[in-house]
Structure formats: structure tokens, C-alpha cells
Length: 136
Image 1 (cartoon, helix red, strand yellow):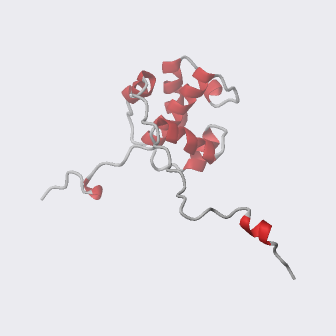
Image 2 (cartoon, rainbow, N blue to C red):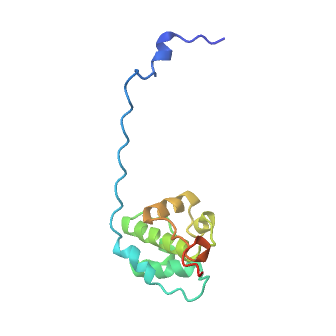
Image 3 (cartoon, rainbow, N blue to C red):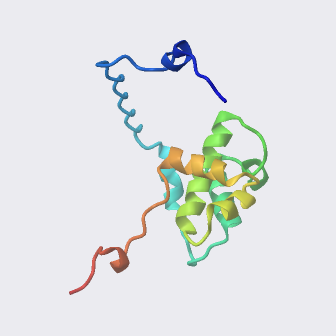
């Protein structure tokens, strides 16, 4: 049988009438980096361009090779190029899941999710299915 002492039960209790501190507002996102906008100039010639080709093109814009982008190095400029490549692959290939993208980049799906959060997530699909531009 467990017997709680009064001191232990009141240790974590909040005093009545005191409200918890309000949460701080989230910082506003920074203006878009020119390098992030640069990958959007990549011509997608076919609807399902291979992800490695997308990574190579984004890496070339930043001055890195495919093996450097998918490798383990953590230099700041390389990580930014990697995040841009992850965003480009996620936007160009909405059919790929986060674990599939992670396998291409030799990373866990949570690392891919973090990169997408840093770069603004996946681009929303556009078309009549979402009620955008439906012809009446």
C-alpha cells in the first residue's frame, strides 16, 4: 500500500489564482533564401524525374556533387544545399514518402521532415481536386 505524505503531494501543486505564463509567439519565418528559390528554376522534363537527377541538379547550383549531398558531412553550406535538395525532391515527387526520400539521402525520415519544416514543407498540390480552378 502506498501512503503519500502531504509535503510530497503539494510539492508540484500550483498555487491557486496564479495563471501559467503565456507562451511566446513563434518567430516569423525569414525571407526566402535566394538559393531556395534557385532550385525552382530546374526544368522538370518528365513527370517522374529520378530523385538522384534532381539532387544532382540542385547540388550543381550549390557547387556540390551527389555523393557530397547524400554523405555524412555537416558543414553549414553543405547542409543548406542538402535541405534545398530534399525540398526539391519532395516538391517534384509527391508520390514519394518521407522514408523513401530518406533512403535516397541516407537519412532517417525524421531528418527529412526536419529539412522540410526548415524549408517550408511540401508544396501544396494545385488543381480541381482541391477546389482550385474548377470549371463550372
